[in-house]
Image 1 (cartoon, rainbow, N blue to C red):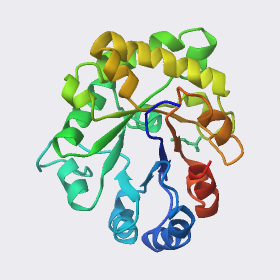
Image 2 (tube, protein in one colour):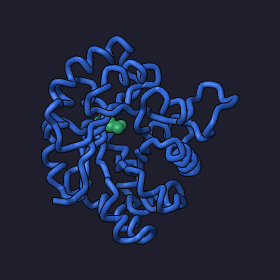
Image 3 (cartoon, rainbow, N blue to C red):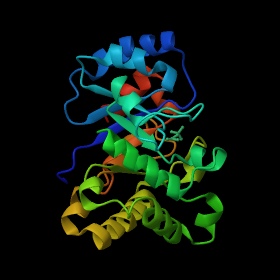
Image 4 (cartoon, helix red, strand yellow):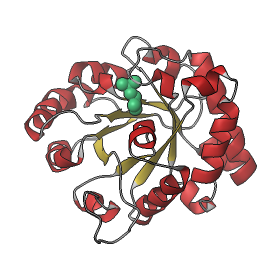
Length: 252
Ligand code: PGA
């Protein structure tokens, strides 16, 4: 057993209204009320954050956003939301650099870094996503891709900042496809990420950083993934929308 406390996170993507958010929490909270083995985080769309934070108040479930802007105060950035706003709305965390943001919204390692720094400055826990695409894996470039994403998007952080982030390894070919990485495949990627962390920040930081796996995590495959000592939790998309299903993932 590693000393790292598991983090079971749900990424709702662009799903659910505020009313559906309230319904979810009503069903979900009693199912995880006794779950003290892990941190639990739900990341709904911006519009639902207030409803989620209100519903989760007084429970052990934390609420996070799916993105934040890098400007740390306020400003003329139409359509964006800042980290201090998220904090004020009751967020504890924020997902940064999800592959869908990289694929559809021009997110780069450089903007991932800036957003992460803004999140840290506001006291939010950044969950920074990395992962290779199918053609990159098939051409044997997984290690290179992870190294580049780490080097440009994460490694410029100072050690004190790095100590406050979580990394999520999400192979793009496994997201929303039902094709989960085998526990061994995921563990191998986690080991290479941890080696990069050790080379940059040292042994202690490498032993302490939590690395989540994401990509088609379901109630029936979570146990095998979590049995890997390298896997410190999961970032769950589709299967986090159902309160019963996500509770059974949390309670793996
Ligand atoms: P999925 O998504 O669980 O639906 O594959 C994971 C993610 O995108 O974080």
